[in-house]
Structures are given as C-alpha cells and as structure tokens.
Image 1 (cartoon, helix red, strand yellow):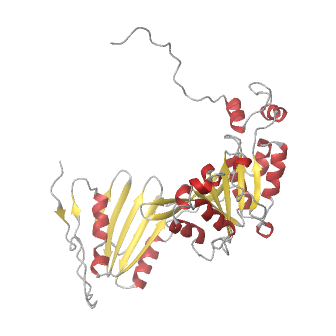
Image 2 (cartoon, rainbow, N blue to C red; image 1 turned 90 degrees about the vertical axis):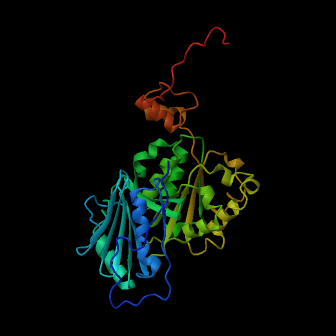
Image 3 (tube, rainbow, N blue to C red; image 1 turned 180 degrees about the vertical axis):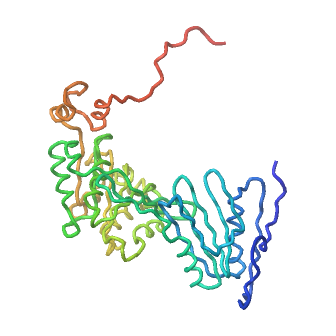
Length: 381
C-alpha cells in the first residue's frame, strides 16, 4: 500500500543564499511527489535540482564518465556532504560549497558516473566540475587483440554513445577462417586507408555463423589509426528518427575526433532488402543519403552492414557502383579447407562447414537441450 505523497521543500538540506548574490527576478518553485515506490537515489536527484530551478545557482554543467576508477572520489576538499544514498546498483551523493552544489550519481557494475555542478557563475561551475573529476577515469591500455568501439542506442534521455574495448583479433590471426577467395577480398579491404576510400557502403552477406562480425572486428583493428568505429544497437530507430540520425551523423565535433567514422549495423535485412522502400518507409532513403547524399557531405561516414540475405535479394540502389565500397559474400569453408582448418574430416559434410560449426566441432560444444522423452500414453479427462 502506498503512503500519502510527501512534498519535498526546496530548502531541504541547502545552504542559505550567498551574500552579495542578487536574487533572480523570478523563481520557479520545486515540488516533488514522493511515495514508497521511490528510491533514495531518486530523492537525491530531486534535491539536486533545487539551486538551478530556483535560480539561486543558474549555471549548470554535467559530464558523463566511463571506465571510472574504483577509488575515484568525485568530490572537492571543501565539499560538505548533505545527502548520501547507497544502493545495490548505484550511489548518489549531494554536496555543497560556497556558491555551488555538486551532484554525483555512479553505477557500480558499469563503472560509469554522471557528475553535475550548479553554481552562481559559469566559471565556478566549470572549475568545481574539473576538480571533482580530475584523474577519475582509467584509460585502458591499448592491446593488439582489442579495439575501442562506440555503442549507440536511444535511451530515456535521447541518443547515447558508450565506448568499450572489445576483443578484435588482428587480421593475420583469423585469415584462415575464410575461404581463399573471400580471404583475398577481405585482405584488400583491410589495406584501404583514408586516401583510397572509393565508396561509403560495405556489405557483408552470407548465412549465419560464417564470421561476418569477426571480420568487422578485425577491420576495426586494422583501421583504428584513421577511422573511429561505432556500432548502432537500434538501427531501425536510427533511420526512423531524423533527430537521432543527425546526432550520430554529425558526431561530437571535437578537434580530436577522427575524420572518418565507420557505423556498423548488424543483421539489417529489412533495411536493404529488395522491398525495403515499401516496408521500411524513409529508412532506406536516409541510409543512402548518409552515404552519398547531402547528409553525408563532409562527414566522411562509412556504413558497414551485415545481412543474411543473398546479394540478388538486396535493393539495387544499395549495391550500385560508386556507392558500395565492397560487397562480400562470406560463405562456408569448402570441404578441403574446412578439413585443413579442423585437422581432420570428422563431422564435416561434403559442402564444407561454417566457421561456427568448425569451432563447435573443435571445442565439442553442444547446445543445452531437454532430453527427448517418450510421448505420454493414456487419455486425459
């Protein structure tokens, strides 16, 4: 049973208005409805809005932190903690100082944090934020078998990009996973650099389990010096929402952002199929516009799409010359190459095997299934 709503007064837990700071011409009251469904961190979030909402601290700055150090304090020496809420999956803390409020929300499992400062001046807000976050992030050491990849998704507060280091074996270590003609074509693709890009669309098509995603990870490793790689987790939303598409296409605009970007879209059969125009509305048009239309001009965006569809089933506008950087069918390893890969013929059919099938044969891995049972006998009333 829910308890009656409680009103949270904006004066709770806050310092008096600093002397010498003029009152705003108009203030907005801060009132929140609280019941037993709210968590402690929700109340900290609500109280953190006070100074900014009322105009006492009209300047706000927020930053998101990834790969947070376990020992990162995210505070300043003069901060006075007025609320501290610790829960299983998160930690919310509210601190105050002379003319500013510091709100920190950190998530333990994902090593992420959101740090917000409101203050009486923009300079003060930026200074407190810089002090609180100094040295808080642990930069992962570069490795030969991993590569940084950004993951885009549309969350409750709009488009969001999170960067992670993912496993990505160098090309020379996985070349034998592909049939000879496919490996030779992929090798030419791996050798492309910013000066030799001739198209914007990269298609990898073939049956499941043939190593399309593995090849893309190797490509990300090979191109990491000149191309930032992002994976879009909700491509149907990306091309269905112009605002989301603009956010991803335009990038951050930072000076240190790589000039070229590769957007990876996995299993997008419906987006590029022959009837995509009818089934996906404007999504196909927006995809093509991002490759060589007005939206793509000056953005240097490459699009990599994996699909299980046969090349003949794809929309002709997708695979026309000049637009497609590469269209590669990643198929099974032929019988002799599959036998060589595995070290013997056991379990390999006359038409060869997919990469996934070879790894299953090599490791002996089998899916967990319910044992077959005898059918029931008798009758039920």
